[in-house]
Length: 589
Ligand code: SF4
Ligand code: SF4
Image (tube, rainbow, N blue to C red; front, side, top):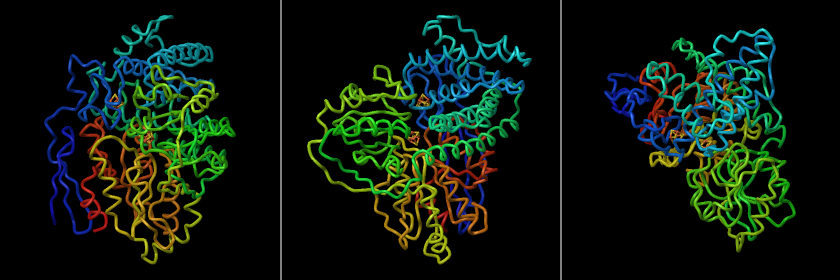
């Protein structure tokens, strides 16, 4: 038996992994690091505080400017918006008890929350508008709920925003309700509260995507409102927060199912499709982000205009949808994950459309040919708010486009739930015969940190009798590698976007049913890379489903306090990633 020591980021306890011959069996927390939880190390000159994503400064928190580029004014406006949405949620939750529900408020709640996800909206002016709308909706709903007999004892303590408040006044208000505005909050409560809020942010994002395609669910909205309201309750205990966190995982599963139905109901079930990574001579539009409806509109509106449309980042899996791939000018995929966009957009000789996350500060070289739509925004970048992409098309026609065809590799996408389950018999037979020894779900977000090459190396070193299932933008670390096949089954199976995580759950559940066992008993290991809050929601879903021994990296969330981490380790066996060699040896023995 060997003993491995590893000190994961400073605020995490010292973990000792005791390694048995075939797998890690015990994790003992023996020492809490001396360094206080970031929330406790309050620094007077801090201008903002945000630690919601993996690239947070020093692994602790962004305090002057976001590592993502978020400025302190936007940070304060986001804090204010989230606070008002909590108040709105408290009224909406009470409204449900007296039969007052409002479809517009449901939709607005999700949009407002989604706007505050990492790398979505950096435009202070848009947040001023959202705050104004949130206050108006909150006050109007308060009157209706009160008239219907609802009890609103907290309503008089709601934050007051005078009509016509300036941006500076809103920023000052935002600073008064930010994460560090109340230093008396217990660090573990704060940790769970933020974990819940970040999970809700992911749910809100998925719910918004589904609603755009006409799929909504009252239970999802009711949970978002009641859980956001709960975060205002200073008496909520650790146990109640833990329950809410797992409930968030359940609701996220339901929301992902809703989104899966929305995507496949609108565009058909993805089918395996070969996508060129090269380019075609001619005018070009590049569509990035996650929104299928925006891509469809661009394809429809640009049809017959002599323009080729390319996907970037998380749009890659869209090539597999029958109702999208039918467009003959929907050519191929250009570039990789979000953090490489500045270099890739710079080199793209056409117009660029950014739908939803993840946008980065545009370089001057392409700031006049990048457009935003939906919730995404960057100050000074032209925003298309009405679904009319004529300015994008016009810009593409003005630009030179690609001077000649360029042949490159191809990749195959379209292995979502239905496509994989249609060959389930072959997969099951391959497992039974021992031809497939293990499945690795290597999925999640990509990012700029050097430690993320773990995922590339892991996939490269995975034995040839294993299959890699992948999804989300983390796959761009290895998406174009030729891993070969096992008896006609590709060794690299791209399930889709982060928005398609439901397909991965469906596949795992179907395998478990076929082998009459639990997901934890399958020859399947989950290796997650996280970056932003959709990944938080997916992690909570996996915890709700009881999936154990998830390996999480490249670093653990700064917002997880040592005690909360202990719970996650003890209850769910969550492990920080080690080295690919050690992890593969631990998993496979
Ligand atoms: S979203 Fe991430 S990078 Fe941006 S300010 Fe927050 S923690 Fe920092
Ligand atoms: S998976 Fe996450 S980090 Fe990657 S593009 Fe999607 S939202 Fe952004």
